[in-house]
Image (cartoon, rainbow, N blue to C red; front, side):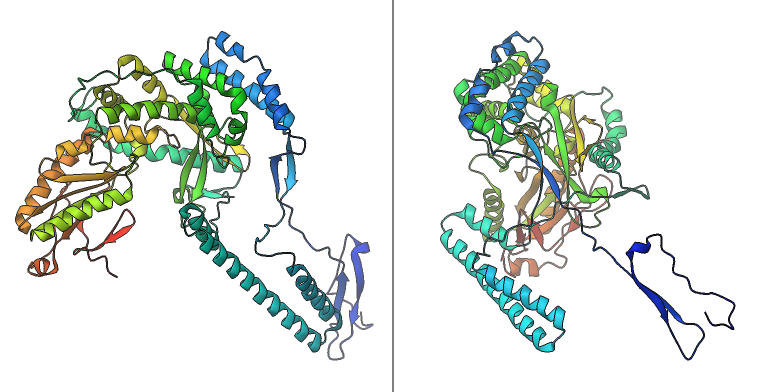
Amino acid sequence: MKSHNHTLLDWILSSSPDRIQEAGILANSFSDHCLVYCMRKIKALKSPPKVITTRSFKKFILKSFLSDLKQLPWYRLNLIPDLDCAVEYFQSELLQVWNSHAPLRNVRVKGTHLTWVTADFTLIYQLRDSLWSNFKSTGSMNDHYEYRKCRNECTKQTKMAKTHYFNENINNNISNPKNFWRTISNIQAPPVHSQPAAVKVNNQTLQHPLDVANAFNDYFVRCATTLIAKLGNDMQSERPHAGQAPPTVQSPCTRQEFSFRPVPVSVVTKLLRKQKMKYQSGPDQIPAMLLKISAPAIENPVATLINESLATGYIPKLWKTARVVPIHKSGDSTLVSNYRPISLLPVVSKILDKCVYTQLRDYYQYWNYLTPDQSGFRPNHSTTTALLKVCNDIQAGMEQENLTGAIFLDFAKAFDTVDHGILLEKLKNSGIGDRTLTWFQSYVSDQSQYVSISGSSSLPLPVTCGVPQGSILGPLLFTIFINDLPNVCKASTVHMYADDTVIYTSKPNLPQLEAVLQEQFTEVEKWIKHNKLFLNTDKTVTMLFGTAPKLHKLQNPHLCVGTKSNGTLTTVTYLKYLGMWLDPNLSFGP
């Protein structure tokens, strides 16, 4: 401070003087206001390491593990009258032995090893880092040049090694489609499935994991119930008795009644051993890997639980609770509407699902009950068979110089809005006996789900409609639910892949075509309303097909199909159907 100045303007205060490396004043001959400075020791911040909980298999011996499992008193399962308690006992005993042989521990996750980076790269990487350190200490431009030359060589060698690695893998797996496409997927950047740190709900940002989990669970459950509420008033006016099934367009079954057969232990053993190791555990924390390696020791108790469920017509509550994982689709990652739910059910419940699915599928196949107009979730059927069917029919219309009009239906949350009362009525009409129907009623009722975010789990919420997501039996149940839709279209063809439905017909001129499609669409709208599904008319579109000369003769090559709300369906000239782009001439060109 100058002798003639009585003010002190600049201060540097520190509560940790031991961290001050140097301090002083830089004199300035042009001003009395000198620069006050200090140099403080700063410790470089390091991000905390990623820690995950995993199992230690250092002392795991499979023979010893199976021996301990076999010595458990599994006979007690037959003495427990309540199936819920029996399942709880099974899970507790299995996990106790599992934890003793493969205890949980926290480990730090290191960086992902790049497969194409071999030990030969170690020396060149070390040289690069050494040259960088040398440049930082000398500041010489010659040293910087040497560093850049080595760095560029490292980058070049790494890219060449990566290219060689993937080329070799692709060439070696040309005849193995599964490994081939796995290699192609690895070339692309892997999708990021990190859990959201915060979400916005009603203009409020939620950051605590428990609040985020509750927000997701509430949204996922409300998606279906909100759609059903929109239809509620109309349904009440037309169907005053709640829960009453609509008039079915499929006659009640007169064939042999379906009932469950006991599941042999050998079948359970086969299903346990076929479990894929990559399957995650559900709410019970029992992974597929545990069931797979434990098969010789737990085949009998699992078979006991499954057969008890089939005999009593009851599904344990623990097997009807799903853990939901939100997966980001696109857009703003803070909006819950930009996520889709992935439901994880207990793996043991999927063993039961598979047993029921096999018996029910065989029954429907034997009696040829399922419509041939469905390509989804059926053996020897796929999106390819659906595309071939639709495209071949359209092509046949072109060869007869006809126009073909198609309506591509878009159901909103079709799997999630299935009405349980209507589903059970359709199961009964398909030949399911009353005693077996009790099991299906237990299967779809009292379902619940919760969302887990960063170790915090939301409150479980009841799922009052829809087929169980993430289950093996759910898709077949939906197929049965929608099985009678083609019956209402007497003058047109319907083809479905799950809920992706197209209605089409061919006529020599546009007025006839529009008249038939309008009549058919009106009947379909009635069926949708009676079955309490929701049609998204904004995404339901029409498309006109024909040869180029035939379409060129039309003054207005568009279809006019009205909706019950006095709207008109949008006509498109290009459409992506089951992964393939369709154009009016089926040219499949660019």
